Length: 450
Image 1: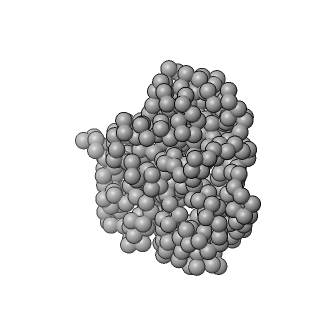
Image 2: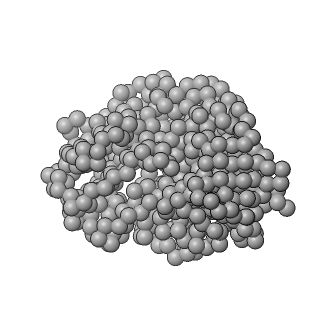
Image 3: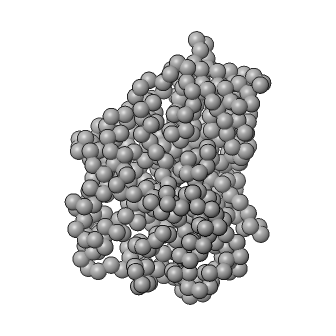
């Protein structure tokens, strides 16, 4: 096992770790990045099929996500708008209806309750301090209930609650019963409002990279100037009198400080000496990753466009509750994207790819017709099965966690600093949040080294 010396060691080669490394090397620090996988990008991963990029992980950016937009523009990564010309489909039981906009064609009563619940969540979210959610005036009340409890009390229409369940799965990759109301409010505020989280034409799903997302992360690494070591899962971090010793599978790095830029549940599986304070360890035990399987079916052309459809659909039945057109900018080949999330993802996580393919393609055919039955290619990614991710899109906080352990999320412990999109105060859970967290952790380290 080889030894390396550096000013700073960064654990994790996703957007957070790479941004931290970039900021540190620009301040003339020697940095070693240890990445467990055989690739960079973390929760973004781009494959290619006949020259068309297929994003199996994060793929979108949207308005107010200024860091990622600025970096992409500076480095020449062009984006294009997610296909939205035409009408969306809403499927409920045996009925399929066309609609435009974000809200599906529900009855007047259901629409009223949907609008009321939407308004209330946006209104309450503004009352949550982004840097310290546990200090909100009603923090204990909100953290003492799930999002499902809120919906049961405030949304009296079953149809409206079903749509909220779909929206919650789409945003958090979990069920309403899983997540604290306080965490949901924080997450909404961190993005701006619910419309920013859910909208395609003016929200987080608006733009895609022509190259796919992973090449953007790779460019961030190229420009960073750090030493990158792949296939190097970190097993142990020791805090010494004059620095840290970070032990990976193939090497040991001696540095002044270390930034851990991986999901909290994975950070909690590293062996620390001395052991972490109880609050930090208890926090990582209580931050599960979301459950999502991203499914892509490739067709010779985006046939749904000829029928005046966007490729976007909502279904109250599932197992795919939302779909999108994920075709490249050229429009060829056609790519349908569907998400298995929450309970659906948990049920199908241990099935084979072939079994999931049959279920997903059947679902596509029920929504888009017989032409969806015969894709020329299919691929999916169960992120909960990934050993160095264990779920996507990000961690969520169940009831009681923010108010009991929230203060431990970003607080450095000796020479250990924390990054990752889960630690962001803006666009938490997104690439933008990962970049913000990397900048913040690097600034902490530079202040200490000064």
